Length: 350
Image (tube, rainbow, N blue to C red):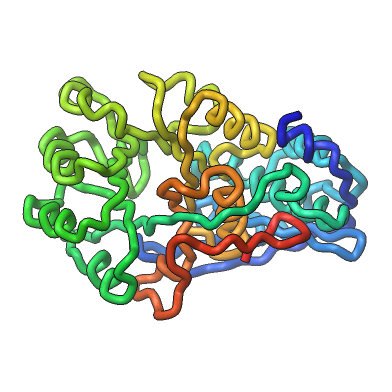
């Protein structure tokens, strides 16, 4: 029996729901806005977090209020199917094509939490997986012009931190050498598959060569495989991993070659059915997985940490505690690996 089969027949009753706006300036030089979704019924509350990136999409949903027809008795599968039919952006089309997946996952994760709480059980108990400590990396950009300070200032306070960094053409040889000297870089994300966003990063063979050679043990995420880059990266194929193109099994199968590792972002996959199927697919084919965050500000962060704990605890999970995302992280934050702290009811962590 698959894990989806174990959860899909969970029953839940929704009486009403509420939306809560969260906002925080984060280390990638933008103000992050998310929305907490609170599904309520039977004296319980299920929580999820909408990680759509555009603040105007959150403001439109909050302005419209909790107007989706969700009240009633459901199975988790039945509600998932209903969410697939609904327009989750009524009155305003989303700014990004992928945003409906993000919002659908928010509602499905809240529904999973509510169903488990109403049933008096937890996700790990239901699927029979033991929560384990979670290895994490901190994802950062170095600003323009780039400076080592986002890395070195964090290492001064937390010497054991590991990082996932976003190289840009402004990285000089000196920048790369300084980062390599820290010995703390586990992943480099070239963001070669973004178009029309603030993080677009067109391929640059000189940058790829400079970075890939300087970090011989780091994962190489989302390179853009144009002719020049592809030839250079061929000997490094076993280190290449993928994030932005991955929305489920079909995208993994469509990759130019079978990967050793992929970044499975639950919100980018969208539905719980596809999320559980993707994890099962990777497990069955020896494809490693690591979790990816979306600068969650609320309960969504704990939920992706919980999924990492159950499905891929020992990989470079981009699920660091949210305190590391502010420009100047405070003292006393949890360090890697995070202790296993799954709740005994619901879909919650911490």
